[in-house]
Image 1 (cartoon, one colour):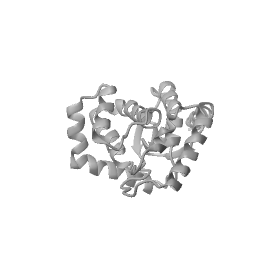
Image 2 (cartoon, helix red, strand yellow; image 1 turned 90 degrees about the horizontal axis):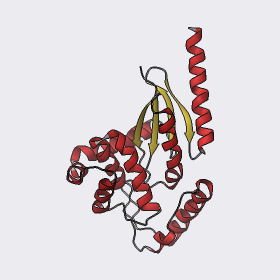
Image 3 (cartoon, rainbow, N blue to C red; image 1 turned 90 degrees about the vertical axis):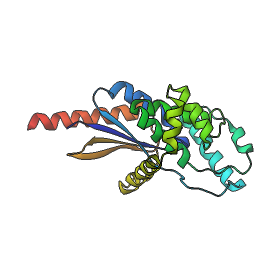
Image 4 (tube, one colour; image 1 turned 120 degrees about the horizontal axis):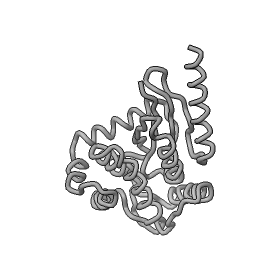
Amino acid sequence: MSDQLIYVADPMCSWCWGFSPVIESVREKFGDAFDTRLILGGLRPGTTKPMDDKSKQTIRDHWEHVETASGQPFDFAFFERNDFVYDTEPACRAVVAARRQDEDKAFAYLKRVHRAFYAENRDVTERGELASVAEDVGLDRAAFEASFDAEDVRTETWNDFGLSQRSGITGFPTLLIGNRSDGHAVVTVGFQPWEAIEARIETWRAQRAGAAAQV
């Protein structure tokens, strides 16, 4: 029975971009102690309506808050785009395709998609951009493209969305800790700085060690 950290995120979620250095630190410090899994939450999958001025302002406000809270870079030229459809399904499916190819690199791919979208103003709803990002992290482009187009990868992506919803997850990023036998506890729903996340994981580990010692 291995302990798990389950990270639920979306590659086009601004708070997940803000949390990107934090989850990287989590994996660096606790990667040997936990089986770390990545689940795609599905922020706005299947959206078909282009952004209007009101939605642009709402999203821009979110980006500004994330920039202030996390220090992560943003390219606000994004809001000069016309007729952009904020459909997160392709980017989520791309992370699933990366996960299929190399589960460990899926985290690196998620981070690179975040950066491409938020800091470089690249259109990560487009298959070609997503394939180029795959090359950036050392994934085979042809294998990635074949996987991205595969029906079973589409199904797996929507299964991730369903798992997130059935688990009662209400926002991203979400980090869970635990195991299949005892269940999972929430480390955070939403952005928190590294120091807070580290302390919560260490508290969980200490409580678990204490409980084991009493058995």
